[in-house]
Amino acid sequence: MDLNRSLDPSDDEGSILDVPETPPFVVVHGGSTVRSSQGAQQSNPGSRLSLHFSGGQESGGGGHTPLCWRDGRFSDWAVQVGEKSYSLHAFLLARASLFFESHMSVAARTAAEENVPATRGSDLTDVLPHSCHSAFEDALDFIYSENQAVFEAPASKALLLLKIADILGIGGLFEAMGRRIEAAFSETAPLLLEQYCRFHIPGTDDGAALRQIRDGAVELIVRKFQPFLANPEMRTALLRLPAAVLAEILEADDMLVAGEDAVFDFVAARVEENNTAVAASGCGSGAIAPSATSSECTGASFESTTSQDSGEDLDMLWLRVRWAHLSASKFAQIIAPGQRLLRPKVAMHALTVRTSRLDLGGTEAFVSIGAMAGHVPPRRPVLPPGVPPPTSTEIDFCFHYARSDQYTCGDALRSQPKRIGDVVLRVLVFPAGTDTGVARGSLSVFLEAVPQPHWPRDWEFANLRYAIACIRWPTGSGETWAAKRKSDLWTFKANRLDRGWHDFLAPGEIHRYLGPDGFVCLRGSLEPECLGRAFLLNSQAGNGSYPGPAGEAAASSASRRSWAPRATPTPSAGGAAGTGSGGGGGAGGSGVGAGGD
Image 1 (cartoon, rainbow, N blue to C red):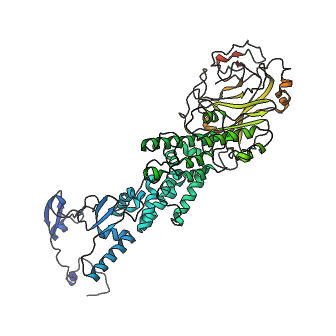
Image 2: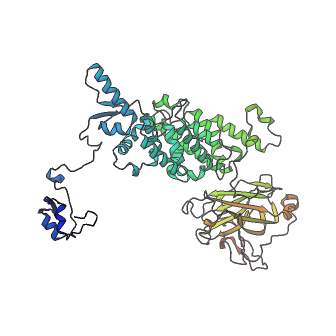
């Protein structure tokens, strides 16, 4: 035989390569077992054989069922966590956790040295913080998972699991939770901070990673405070933070809020929840929190569902409210008879702060009682990038618009008033429109005069040209801000307090003016050329009002007061003016009426 030539199957010398006969094997088709031979295989060389294990679980053949920590099957290691006991598997625990591996090794070595039976269990009650006990079962789910890469944990337990992984040395879980936290950090910072505060012991070091998460969460909450408040889950987490952590957040100058009213409402909600918790625990009457600390009252730490603050803790929060920049309606709540929000000394501080802002003599009169309100600036204003700050004749107002059903028709928002000359003006906004016949969902905006006690009964500021602008945020790189602006001429008087547009923005148009954090920015202004008419001495010389140019006509806010007089229509170049009860008026028309409530 020529070994250099190829072997052809038809050669007679094929017997040189003796191929043994293929032994029979079992092939399962549709549940039946048949015996195949070499001949059968050769008769159908193109067929594919399906080989299966014929001993299923139902036949007692040992089908595979993953081990589970819940049923204790084949368990050989007991774990105690608080009042709960778990029957677990030593191999899986040691493979996943450095803590369990070390504990088991020490137990085995000790038993060998002392010639006693080895301990087959671990007590984690004092190893893990009490607040982490509820998340231990989620850690077991990870340890027992056959595909840990797809393990998911709720945001409300992510940091607790990271802490467990750090203590027990579960590297895979630590990395998985690290990725989970990093991916959702910008949306769940309040939840993460609340979890951190549950297990953190003041004065101790939780490690660089956890400190970084804590500091990053505080910084992000400051930058997105009001947007987080619009999310119920995040708001609940913020309300549960310790008073010291909240004070650190609330004292920031650059905390993102539309106005100080949002800070007041948040602290008031915290106080109300605290008073409810105090009343439920039987520690007080449910009014202002007592001076006793929560641990003295209930023996519980912050890990309880609802924290209880001492009176000093609540005072610390109230002192972070910038009373000089609070709206009149909110301030009225803290000076109302029988108010249950502030203790007397804090209410006195708020009154002093407010008064010192109005006293032209400066702060000397208030130094003796410690009020230095004039040195507390307002929060950082919310403005699109590139927009200049308001001038002395401009009034800025922004509000947070999280969703279309956040406001109902007729809900009114007002800016802080601003004195321009003698006239005091503020921006009046109806985020869901007025009930005067305009399309529901319109944005209604007005400029409103705020009567002062020293004004004469027949006060009047005649022929003031004003403007209102809604500022649009840049939407892309290189784009600058823009604004939709409307102007009008109006005489403000006692029965004509405001003027503006019921349909400043059409329904749905507001979304074009939302900032990245959900804020809408408005700017009202008086034109500089009419500044001389903003003084009472000169304003009395006015001789009526001009209803505005043709086009998009202005109107008063609503004319919903029962005592509002009906004005006599005044002809104009653009057409006849209507009355306030007629809503915003049509093109060329102008609605006139009393100011809105």
